[in-house]
Amino acid sequence: MERAISLDHRYPATHRDAFCIPSYGSMGLKSDGANQSDYSTVTYLCGNSLGCMPKSTRNAINKELDAWADRAVESHFRHSGEQQGLTSWMDIDLPLSNLLPSLVGGLESEVAVMGSLTANLNSLMASFYRPTSSKFKILCEKGAFPSDFYALYNQCALHKVDPEEALIRLEVREGESYLRTDDIIRAISDNHEELALVCLPGVQYYSGQWFDMEKITKFAHQFKDVVVGWDLAHAVGNVPLALHDWGVDFACWCSYKYLNSGPGAIAGIFVHEKHSQVGSSDNGRYLPRMAGWWGNNRERRFQMKEVFEPISGALGFRQSNPSVIDVVALKSSLEIIQDFGGINALRERSLLLTNYLVELLTALPNYHQKLPKNTSTAGFTILTPLAEKERGAQLSLLFFPHHDDRKLDTMERVFDYLNERGVIVDERRPDVIRIAPVPLYNTFQDVWRAVTLLNEAIKSIA
Ligand SMILES: Cc1ncc(COP(=O)(O)O)c(C=O)c1O
Ligand SMILES: Nc1ccccc1C(=O)C[C@H](N)C(=O)O
Image: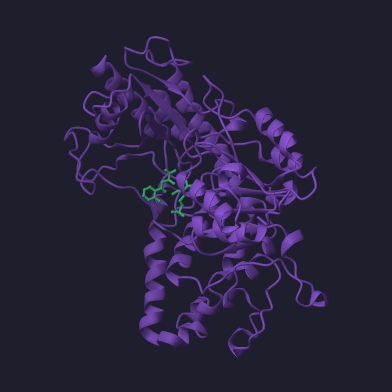
């Protein structure tokens, strides 16, 4: 505990106060009455699923509600808060183009705020997955987040390609917990003639593995007509990215995890400039897409002509006018990240926190480096790669023994023990708990407390 306190002094969570951290009272949990009261904050380590709410978000949304109340439709073009520097709704998402690209390592013109993750993944695949009879395979992973799998599978069907034949689903080797980069590279190489698309997650939701995105992207691009797209749901705002320099073709992400923009928040896309620039001399030549009026030439958007002139860059992939309330929620959170010092500052503190988590967990008596042969005594292993460059904030812990009866199952019992005591993590059935200290608001004492209670929980079972 002393060490955690001293680390918190040395590396303080300078922006914790900018967030609403749930309390025992607000979550309906019983505080211990001695060290905690109903107003004490819980130990929230679940920013990999839903980031906490920035205090500034409420005000930002209220201003848009005022604009709606005060001026209704006119706010599209003339905002009632113009004098305070508020943007009219027509261009509400444009101020984000200063804040978002640096998080993904894209040019301003390569990033747009729109839609939601799965919808964007589907839209981007409509443009980037153009199978032919000889080149139609998609390299993806077995155990992908189900929504991604459903999208990939059905894109095949939409293109009249048999998904069973087209999807190459990479599997983690027997006895291992994450994919080897060499196996991915080999699969690309072995299939390159028929390969049309490589579509993988930047950080894997279940194992927490951060893929070697640069190596995989560059390797795949050695081969003709292989497109590389990344799902960055668990990577954006978590690890530094350089999508432009790596030559990534497209990427998409959601904003409710490490970008703290609220449940179902507006998402984002990256389209490399090599695909998204529409030169004036190119008249009519642009990458076919799922199109809509918000991707059309801004000046002529309201002329109601039957001519689609996409905006050059990622903005030309937008379809609808965005939810204004969603956009300002994202903006208020991105401003905090900027004030913190951007993604490199976040990553620096994230490594300190997660390294501390690794250190404490691996010192516990019931920690096992590998799944033991005899798993009758309660214990856990870590699925996530421990090397810094292969993970982000999250560690995934696999508990054993597993029982189908929830009351007897180790993971469920540990999860309930933690949850009842205000340590909020998440469970991925059947046997995994994910823990993610978030550098913007978590403390070393949060990490210490979670591990101390986790140890108690296992002991109470053993
Ligand atoms: C990797 C991944 N893909 C897809 C989703 C689902 O995204 P959405 O419901 O925002 O489309 C999530 C999280 O919910 C996710 O982590
Ligand atoms: N959007 C949600 C709604 C309800 C429950 C969970 C989610 C998640 O985002 C889960 C997350 N993608 C995950 O990695 O498990």
